[in-house]
Amino acid sequence: MNDAQTLSYLISHISPEPEYLYRLWRATNIHTIHGRMVSGHLQGRLLKMLAQMIRPQNILEIGTFSGYSAICLAEGLPEGGKVWTFEINDEMEDFTRPWIAHSPVADKINFIIGDAITEAPKLGIAFDMAFIDGDKRTYIDAYEMTMRVVKQGGFILADNTLWNNHLCAPNYLHDQQTEGIRAFNKHVKHDTRAQQVILPIRDGLTIIRKNS
Image 1 (cartoon, rainbow, N blue to C red):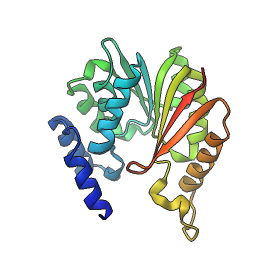
Image 2: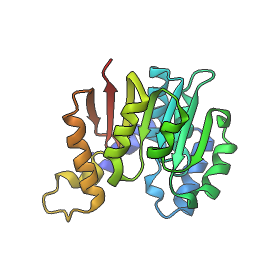
Image 3: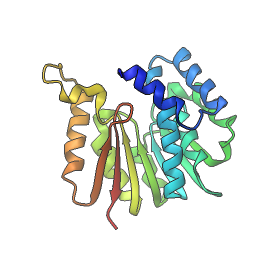
Image 4: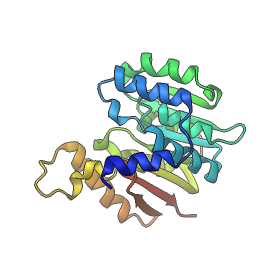
């Protein structure tokens, strides 16, 4: 099977994408410049299931974009759980805030415009889980901040860690985003404070567990 056939097969054999999220996915691709960055059906169902498995009380998300992943994470939260999601690009607010506010899990999401690296620690919250999906050039900074605010035994997810397979392409002209992901992967690999595994799903998803 080619990649398109494999993806089609996978999607036809997993839990369906909720209608609201499909509409958000479609609107994101139509109305934003970088619509391909949205998590989508397969990764969205994985994020929900991981939240259900880990049962976090508080989740930190770095990089809200259109709100799709925040909604998926919130779907998996137990009663009283919260997603604290930060988006540094204030130009996304007019698009994203209504989609979050009108979602079935709006009461579980706190959407904040600002730099999570500096602002998240000010919340004074010990997070059980985090999802890093912001600027690839600052992934190491985001990770180090997250390691300080996530509880021992907590989980950190990092998106796009295979970066369109550019990391394995010797002839690819490297840019700052690519080098940011390459440096991040190396940094995490050698971090003795955690265990990690990279899943080859979508654009690569690294699951990291902070040691107890």
